[in-house]
Length: 517
Ligand code: HXC
Picture 1: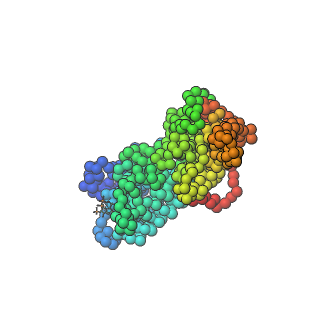
Picture 2 (picture 1 turned 60 degrees about the vertical axis):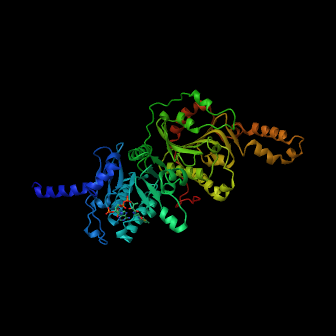
């Protein structure tokens, strides 16, 4: 029996209401501001025509404070799955035109249902946030909804990649859902993220502050380190998310999307030999090294504006996906500090969860000296790096480019911390500390007694350096796999990656380790 015209009409009318979201005026208003609608954001994110919506007919459950008379299409959030690069991805998009994108119990249930679906089917989970926060009229039910989402963010953590894209307000406790995900992308101008806004801070502490100073993408990218990418606009934010997905597997039991080149190339890159300056104290830009090592110079840098003394991100080397962690000698001489340790430890752990091999590029003179570092807990934070590297069971390949001093040498994935292969350039210096520092301790009395103490210290430092400011001493003790020319590095890394991809390493069973937090 054909479906009656009346039934078709009813469905069409309902669909019209759903697509009309918070009303034509509100949608037009957003367009005027240059903002996409919640639905347009999902359409722009997914491959055309692939979006399957879940719960489009859901309605708000709140009845108090006038809600009973209000219609909230989709209850202010569009949820479903679509395809990115041919792979299914789950995503929600909060609709600010509907009750300010506020989160009531049905809105929360839709997000939770999608989280459950992503976890059980093993697909990445994306949240596009644009919301006034907990729906005030729904009170404790709204708070419970956030709790249920947080709980599932934690269940999903380590199972499927989770990415939050902030394109509007994200305030109060609501920030903790993005904060529990793996990566946060914020648009430059329209997104805010804060626990207490400027008015609350003023009332509670008397301090005057602007929203830009505490809640903008720029503040979170460079000062707090809460976010990972700043997008120029909404389209750029979606593009970053798609690019990120191109490096990661759908879940923790899959391999990342490697695209190995059909043949391995060991071609040399002579230009690499000129990158490290002759003067061991002169800086160089490690991004130039990375650009030459990876396919097409294509490197997706994570947290580019935070802790710039360390560089982390993904690329492919002859088609194999890698996570790269590199000291940046051009910033703070490449020392490790609190922020650099936090940034890299979290990145290492993400790579380990999702089976992404790690390449570490080392030029580290040590941990950053200073009162602020000691009192700020560099011991605890630096330990995160050691913990993350030692706990990681993915292939770990280390290249010592220049300095590898002291505890920081160990913290940059030395053989003892479990590196599978360690290559050193002829410029490598592997020592407990720099020559000057070493002799000032070892020969304190001799230097003081010398007729020319400075000259004596210089001579002794040169002696120390001759022994340790080269990779041969460490290589003689088999701490190093081989000493290679910088020009050979790309080919050797490509070969090493192919050799280690099948690595399997088991550890004693336990609930989880106790990483210093
Ligand atoms: C219900 C809300 C709402 C909310 C906004 N609206 N936020 N409705 N609950 N939390 C509604 C408004 O009433 C309005 O409805 C519409 O959304 C658009 O809001 P405007 O204020 O007109 O928009 P704008 O001027 O752009 O300001 C946006 C805003 C502001 C900055 C987000 O609305 C705001 O400050 N909202 C409250 C933010 C907040 O304090 N939320 C609670 C955070 S704490 P009409 O019908 O007029 O269109 C929280 C706790 C979570 O979320 C705890 C988890 C553990």
